Image 1: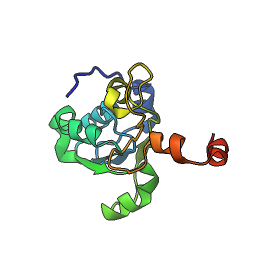
Image 2 (image 1 turned 90 degrees about the horizontal axis):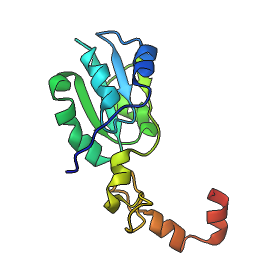
Image 3 (image 1 turned 30 degrees about the horizontal axis):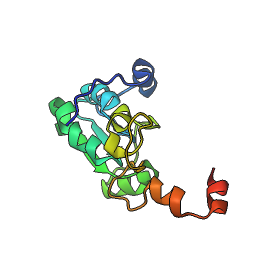
Length: 152
C-alpha cells in the first residue's frame, strides 16, 4: 500500500457548516482518504457516521484511519447516487448532515495502475469502482464517434 499524506479540502469550513451534534447521523458520501470523516467521527458520541465510496481501496484504508471511532462508523461500498437505498438498507430515517467532496483523489492519480494519471504510462482505466466492467479505454476505443461527441 502506498503511503500518503492527506489534507482534506476546506476541512474547517465543512465541519463548521455541518454543525455536528454528538448524537446526530451524518453521511460522508465520498469517503476518500477519510479526512473529513475523521473530524466528523471524533465529534460524535452516540451518533453515527455513514461513509460511502465506490473505491474499495478507500474503504480498505478507512478502518486504520478511523480506528478510534469505528464503533460509530459504517462503511458502505457504493455510489452516493444510491443514497436513498443505502439509508433504507441501514434503516435510517434521515440524516443531520451530509458531505460530498467530489472529484478524484490524489492516491488514484498517484497509482499509475488506476489509469487516471497523465504522468505515468499505463492502461487507460479511470474506474472509481474497479469492480465495474467498463473502462475508459473501452469507451474511447470502441464507442461510436457520435456517442463520444455527445458525451463530451
